[in-house]
Image (cartoon, rainbow, N blue to C red; front, top):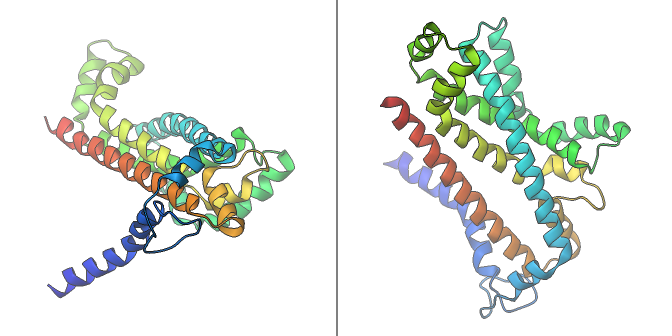
Length: 258
């Protein structure tokens, strides 16, 4: 009972700041205030009509979509090799794949900037996709690996014994069975890119900047309720995609159990 109440209190403490942003985004005043004075949608209107905010958002969406595609392909192939293949040093490779989830992003950001700057990759789409994919691939590997371990390997062996090539057996037998896991991994890869802040802040350029970089800049120089409106949209999109990923991931267990 005591542990449950403590966990509930900690959860509320963590969620409360996020919830406070939502009413502030509907404030009628030109500055951040809680509780808000009046009700207005003008800050959402300001966000959608501001070319800088729209450009940063579209850039983040483009990077997230490209990262999702690259991470899903790479992560699925890596998971297939680690689960189904005979890869020497499998434990070491697994540890290296999980390193981006363990190493603080500030360290990754500094290292990436020092590597990308001489190559002129900072602020470029290629640079963002490369580093965001490196950060997102572990999510795909973990989720797809779980999906693969729940599938009876004898189904693939039966396809191979009937004359199918390994590629055909994967495309026609394995992939349909793990598709919910692949889809869930893709969703989490998108979120890993779209929500990434620290690395994006370091490698953003003057023109090409993510919406998270734009948020940081406005917090420093233009603290208005537009920030609360953008944050609210950010939170809603993130929660929606996270729930979608969770739903698809849950279906993985239901599908493989049949």
